[in-house]
Image (cartoon, rainbow, N blue to C red; front, side, top):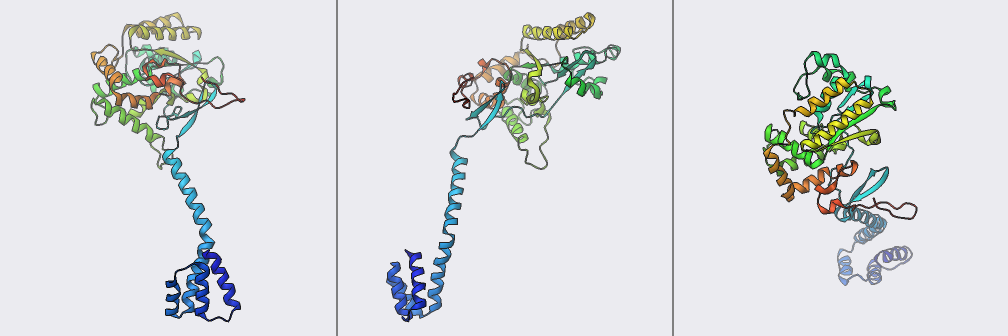
Length: 379
């Protein structure tokens, strides 16, 4: 009504010989304005004050739609940010799966480290994943890469990363060639272990033994929170400079964050390992079978299996009494379990792990699968 009255008044005022007081009274009646408005105009006896007021009406009519539209857009964005459930899509078993309700989880397939070890003569390459028999992996591959030098320097399979071996600085050993990558006869293998069991090994080695876990010392709740924060920071790719993975990030990162698994996961052979001696023995025998298929001599094959089975590396933890206490806390502490699910849940899906160590919800296929061909299926 106000905007209509403004237009009517201007049209009338240009054609009428009414006095300013009469025009003001007419405008007030058309606009349903209070009598005080007319009284104020009469007191000022100023045409300019009337025109100024009416000009404001014209201004608001012009920009009213833009203001309302902007407020609508802003309100919608604010609602989505606060209330709508976030999600993202992950490739599993060759298909796209839309996950919702896990927006604060660490996503899979963010490659931050690629420790490749190459034995070109046997068309073999491996991925050394920290806390997953990585030391056995590098020792075995060093032997296959340069048998003469390995034996000459009297190396053995119980040496740790701290041992200086020539192969570790050999680019041919650390970088697979395009010919090797594109050869269908190339075998790629990696040891993998249950993600929660792997965390326990990490905690005992780096926190209890080395005291390398930030200011947490052996406070497991503090440790899982720091791991989570560090991995979340690495996801902030818009920062300049970009975050650089730390020593602990490399050790704690999900399995899928290694060796570009997201690009060629189907080409890899994964050797499952566990915390006890029998499971360890089984995975070592699987490695022996791979080496035999690739033409490794019986002499070297026997050496690998005997040394690997005879002892454990200096930082092995699967027999320690401390491990029992750490496993108990992992089972019973709700804060620790919550963070471990957020950090490692997707490792249980990307790799063929049994989900029995997870909470009941995450043992089920709770996620949503996009409709295909008019039907919805579950994994």
